[in-house]
Image (cartoon, rainbow, N blue to C red; front, side, top):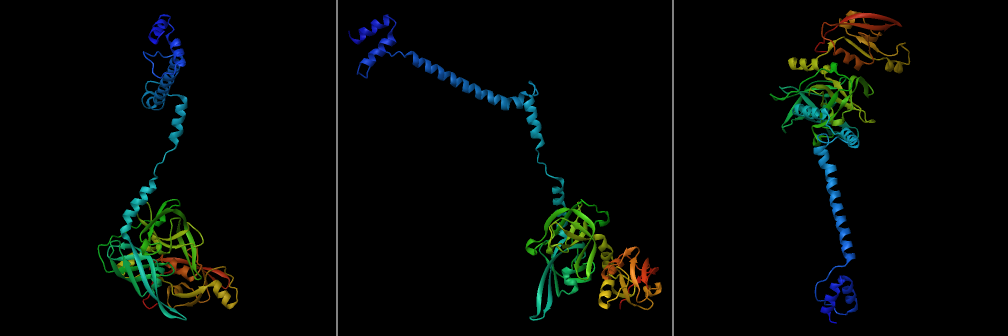
Length: 415
């Protein structure tokens, strides 16, 4: 029987697939005539694969709806929000990055005050014992306090009046020679004048109203002019601090801040959140971080006013010369029975001290209730008074405490 007859016969018996597979298995020919009817196992495999594809597509669509469509468009509007989803929303809501207000404040303060900050360079001749006189350069900062060229800085920035040349560098790049009008080492303050007008003067604040924790912004030249007008910020860390700057000088009533202050910052302003000058940066404790100090601006205000009006500043006049009790006792090997104070060495004739009854050998203990620690401290106290002001002076004489009233006078030109 040939192939065509066999196929017709098998089709009649409804066993097409089975007989056809057998014939294929028994033949060595690769070419088969007529239609090929798939077997049952093939149809079964194709059905399982189709179900898998449908299930995969359904899972993907369901995932998209549950993760994006439902939260964005259905939950809370058409469908209730699941408890798990509520929990996730609450947890994510707690993690927020919101810029602090003081970042914006610091930027505003810097923009307002930057143009009033100047760089100060000095040249000083220093006599070295073996090498002879050599020129030494110094760098510091300052702040314009009057538009007619008056600049406030530290006394040590201008070498306590010993600088041979002072150059002031402004924000626009201009350079002008500066002249020292006044300085006081005990206060570590100085006023320099340049020949200029219409300068951008800084606003002066009220340092008596400062509170610990307030914002503090420092501007200056921390490591020289290559880093000029560097801005650092922090808080007011403390008030009425005292630090010893050398063997004979303790600066008191200072503002403590954790705003970064380095040597070149000296003379630059410490500002509040309004961009007002509240202090003049003066020192940093080298052995610790975050311990910077500034002189309260209220200490400098009366000095600035008088220098602008009169060209210089003079403290009130007492008319004494003296030395610290501790130094006097060590030098002479005696005990004055006073823990601190200043022993009077000389009293000027007809001076306010003479008229008040102070004599050589007396120990000045207090002025208006404040302990007098040294001659430098005494000079700082005198800056608070004006000619004609009265003060209670407590002295010790022969072991006895006496209170006297003193009326301050204007310091003579030759004193």
